[in-house]
Image 1 (cartoon, rainbow, N blue to C red):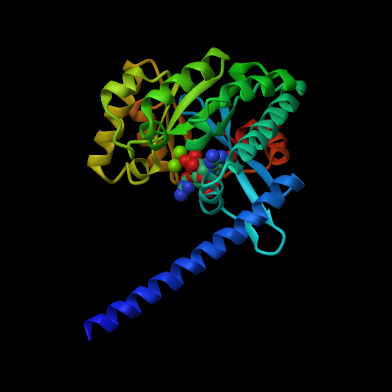
Image 2 (image 1 turned 90 degrees about the horizontal axis):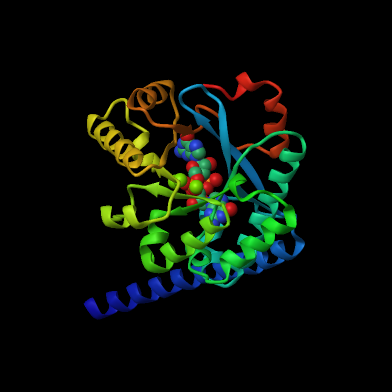
Length: 282
Ligand code: C2E
Ligand code: MG
Ligand code: MG
Ligand code: MG
């Protein structure tokens, strides 16, 4: 009986959807509380390493949420929930404030470590964002060039004209800009040329089996060349083994990031490893 099956199917679907939205609502309430509390969401830092000499070129700040009862929740799980509401702006501001305070601490200790912060689509397209960023830079006294804003190719392509305008304003503050997860978002060569960028990060799906897959190797090599021809620093993310590292060095990629080099870590652990520079070198 098709009608009955459809009814059941429909009911199953709505029950599932309700469970899902209840879970999201629960998470949203917890997130609002976490943003008020201010200490559950912290940042870990993953080194970006220069392929030529193994030097620390900067770090990427990655959000970590320690839920009081559910334990650690990954950014992939909670950022989409925030992104559906205006709470994302409070989150973005808190992450930026934390990252800039850390950059200030490093500068005070004599370390120039540029910090990269990921910005979600909604914050990128928020016309008030560059002004809030300017205020945070003033408050922390961190020079703009010690900060890099990473935005995904997907975010940019969701509204390229607004993104271009915002990226120009961000760069007007001296802040660096990076296109993240490059290669997954169908941006045209025209846009890549128009975008005010300093850095291009090749998505890890192209990087991971680089040393075994000639197709991916060709894609990565031509992306590195394209980036260089546009005057960009090219970063490869997701380096998990020594073979990939060697292949990227041969190709002439500038910077590398991945578990093989260093995992995301607390600022304290990173600061300790600065005393032993070999610990971060390839
Ligand atoms: P992303 O910006 O592309 O960050 C890189 C992600 O790859 C991080 O995951 C990092 O832990 C992971 N990763 C690094 N090296 C390797 C490797 O060798 N192998 C593998 N398999 N993974 C590696 P994470 O921290 O779970 O973050 C996931 C995504 O969530 C980020 O992707 C970024 O888009 C977003 N995200 C993280 N923190 C923030 C934040 O503060 N704000 C916003 N808006 N988004 C954030
Ligand atoms: Mg990123
Ligand atoms: Mg990325
Ligand atoms: Mg990625």
